[in-house]
Length: 356
Ligand SMILES: Cc1cc2nc3c(=O)[nH]c(=O)nc-3n(C[C@H](O)[C@H](O)[C@H](O)COP(=O)(O)OP(=O)(O)OC[C@H]3O[C@@H](n4cnc5c(N)ncnc54)[C@H](O)[C@@H]3O)c2cc1C
Image (cartoon, rainbow, N blue to C red; front, side, top):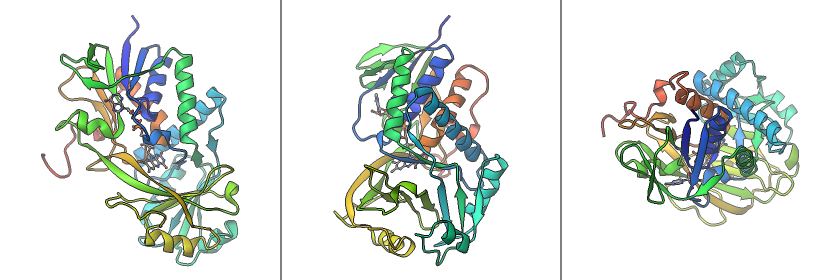
């Protein structure tokens, strides 16, 4: 008998999960209330392999990025820019995270190179290597045009009978989901509601909304060939522009105060001035984006305690886009009874802050 799933949330995690289940023969209803400005609809996201010493996340990134390439081929839409990712180790805490990343990525058989400052400057002459300890070069990583990729996913879903319905959902009694107030039962209900999860399941799910500010810059002279970059020690990253798209730079910290209109935070301004001297970093536009944070920075993927059929996927701390096809596979495997998801992702794992 065909099993039936309701997927709540048509962002990247919900859409990937829905497609994976449809591919495995499930009948799937996707329901989304259409929140504006959700992170899955952003213009670009970085597809990087580096995840420090975390073997599970590195393998997940490899599987996820591979999954995106498969989805790109399958959809016929071009949304991946394989322009490489450069991890700069230098400014504040050079070393361990980046070296651990190289070891893990190499172990997965993915091309990765450690470049000394001189080699970095030769390969990327627009970059000033002063203060740089070394760089990690991931030539097969890159950028995904997220909004386009999500549209392509929705088209694939529609082509397989997985139309997205517009409605708001809440948990209902007896393992049901209330869709615009009407209770609906299913063999599995998957909540992929991003930063809203904590509000929908107060006291049961430790996911909260956190914010990050990104800035669009005036120009980038060689925009269409440069790689995306990140400097983990300095807590910064950037996605170069392309025809029709301005360069984006982000202070990779949780935003707590409102940004000053038209101004880069001084830390970001100084860094760009020093590291990318030819970059016109006049601010054209700025944007606040919300992501789903957990108190231990580990994503959530597992059954909701106290329910028989409800599952949660999310709480990714702003890294999920690249992982989405891989996490969808893990969740579908759990629903098919093939393998349990890793315990470290469980909804009810212990909090590092102790009991609430
Ligand atoms: C600034 C920033 C930069 C990032 N950079 C990267 C990056 O470089 N690389 C990377 O891989 N990832 C990155 N991410 C992470 C990535 O964009 C997100 O993790 C991912 O898009 C989250 O997808 P989601 O499906 O969990 O949630 P969302 O995109 O939030 O989707 C949730 C959906 O659920 C719907 N919904 C919510 N509540 C309800 C309800 N009650 N009923 C019905 N529908 C509901 C909403 O309308 C929405 O469509 C970044 C995130 C941010 C914020």
